[in-house]
Each structure stands twice: as C-alpha cells, then as structure tokens.
Image 1 (cartoon, helix red, strand yellow):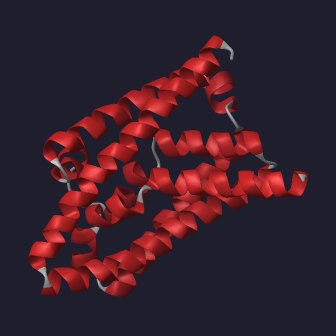
Image 2 (cartoon, helix red, strand yellow; image 1 turned 60 degrees about the horizontal axis):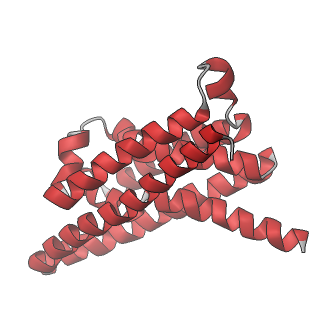
Length: 208
C-alpha cells in the first residue's frame, strides 16, 4: 500500500513539472531556433538546456524551501503567491493577444541556450514544483522525478518540432491555427496553475 502510494506521488511530481514546463508552448517558442540551427545542433542545445534545468530543479528539490527561509529569509508562501500572480498576468496576456505574448514577454531567443533554460524552463512554477517534489520524496527519488519530467519534456519538444516543421511546409494555414489554439489553451492551463499556486501560498501562510 505504501509502495503504491509512493509510486503515485512520484508520477504526480513528474507530471506536475511536465505540465508547468508546457512543451506545447515551448515548441512554438523554439520554432525560430529550430529553423536557425541544424537538427543535430538543435537537439544538442535543447539537451544542454534540459541538463541545466534538471540540475537547478534538483537543487531546489534537495534543499526544499531552505533557500527561501534561511538564505533569502522570506516565507516560501510569498514566492508561491508572487509566482502565481506572474502566471495570472501571463495567462491574461495570452487570452488577449494569443501566442504573440511569448515574444512580447520574453523577447527573441538570440542567446539560444539561455533562452531555452530561462525563463521557459526555470521559473516560479517549475521551482515550486521542484520544492514540492523535495517535500514529498527522499532526495534521490525527488531527483529522479525531476529528471523524468524534464526528459519527457525534451523528448516531446523534439518530436513535436519535427511534426510542426512538416505541417508548416505543407499546411501553413493549419499550422497557424494550431499555434493560435495552443496559445489560447495554454492561457487556461497557466491561469489554473497560477490560481492554485496562490491558494497554496495562502494556505501555507495561514498555517493550514
């Protein structure tokens, strides 16, 4: 029974990180990079960004909320509430302007490696998911959960990028509709996660 519960928590931790990383949206953002680089170069850069993200997430999973309480001397609840507020803002921008919000908020991905690792991989949502994984599991299990979530994201982005390249070459109108649809749906997912982050922060702050 305990083993089954641990497995479910492990899967939940990985899935949560995967959902917050949002490979659908990340693939759209990385289309200019994929077009600029050769396929092997794009895979290498995305892999390196995944390694950087995994190390950062593993660090927060290992330290739990000690970075916030001991180093920054702030309540982790404050981070959740502020991070959720940022997500709410981004989600609203997506509803109003669609996928153009990506470039408006993050700019052009000129520094390829850094553009993938930050802010699309490393942000308030993914950091909070890593801290949650650290609270749920032992350091080793938390690291494996984080690694699984990032690996699944990288693989998904690579596969979806190839599909979108083919779709754009043959069905431009359908490609544009897909991009707009993903942008709008991302706003719903992002907004839902943002509200939950704020609620979790309030619960933690109130000591529930």
